[in-house]
Image (cartoon, rainbow, N blue to C red; front, side, top):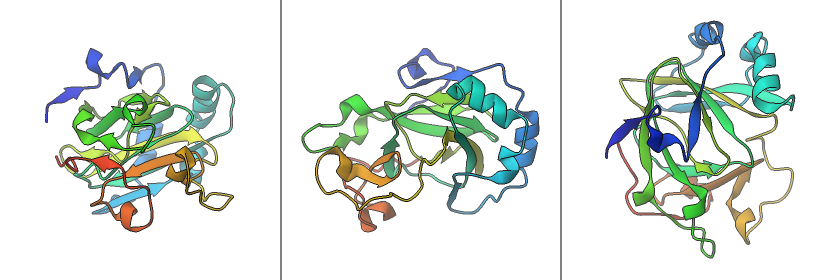
Length: 206
């Protein structure tokens, strides 16, 4: 699979590189976060949210909406799943990392199946802040030169447990957590846990 840079025009349908934020203190704080052999996601981390940049992200990226700042760290080489939200997600690469992305518009509306052959790969260099648009399919980063560390900024409550019983019909069947619509590959652990299985084709491995 060809891996382009997020600075390449090919990334524009999926998101953008965001400039104008001094992330040095946040990147330093991220050095204190775990970096396991698998993938660890923490939606809200008080030590990160106590930094001055938290208010900048809230006000300048989300227009004052309540947000959460957490991380996704570890080692990953497979696509496994794709997810989307009803809003943009911002990621700060604290190491080089690769993102695998697609378009929500390519999900088949009758079966909620998605062809993994449509996925594209982009390298996010260390220190780069990117935005994923709401219609961008994505999941955990993929390792580029070793284990990765990634800051994840989202509206507060995203990825918390659903406050209602899981739904089995329509698009709502994709909901696994609050504001998290997910489609799993048959090989993924999420599929074994009851997530909607709809990724058709190769479970992309890098």
